Amino acid sequence: MRSQSTALGTHREIEFVAGRDSTQLIEDTLGVFFPNGWAEEDRGSEKVYRVYISSVEFPAKFQKLKLFLTALAVKSLSTREILDEDWAHNWKQYYRPFRIMRRTVIKPSWEKYEPRENDLVVELDPGMAFGTGQHATTQLCAKLIEKYLSAGDEVLDLGTGSGILALAALKLGASKVWALDIDPVALEYARENFRRNSLLRRTVLRHGSGLSGMRKKFPLIVANIVASTIVALADRVPARLAPCGTFIASGIIRSRERDVTEALKKNSLSVVEVNREGEWVALAARYVEEPGAVRLFRAQSRASRTR
Image (cartoon, rainbow, N blue to C red; front, top):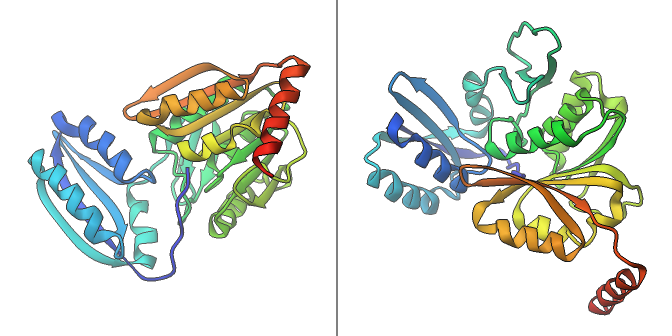
């Protein structure tokens, strides 16, 4: 899943307090409004939420969010303007080490953590790139990587953001990772995170959004992006999967799950596992080899559409 970096300017912080009885509904809705995540702070029977919107987007987004929050009778709804340079650091006070998989722990670079026996620690500074690991889409994807990755696999990570999933794959035993992103700022943060974990030599970083120009086949392809992009990529994934390879897709909102599974099925990708959390879906699929005549027909059909 992706976020866009912005030039230095201003953002608006929206803060509100909610009771525990409404947190699930609030978090499902925030996942739709703010797929790049938000900050939250526990206060006993209540939670404090903080979300950040660029000043340009603020008027339209805030009005929609305010209607929803008013209906839930949340407390202390307030907003304030902050500089981007402050926004890039404010959230850090709420970002603590946490376990994203059974053995893998995400440790912010500025925090201390005493590893348990067999812990795999990923040291991370997401900066202004997407990928703190706290959003459901990333966590669902990470659990599938842990299940389907085999030691020595080479992995393609589409939409790497901070590099969090690629780093987790390397820690779990991937031999090499190709990490792609459309955002050059995100790639710089990712590069620094690979260097911070002494894994830069096992990483190929590329600017780009898809599979065009790729010739290599991978045992595992990961795409934690959005449903529309996954659908658009579906016809190119089989050609880049190694025999018995797995395609993991996340960042899919429930209302688009069927669109994604149908697109995969049309391209001989059989869904072998679906995991859901709140409004979000992640799935694993494998390529089902087709008879030669069927493959030829599909190739001719695709060629005729591009003429």
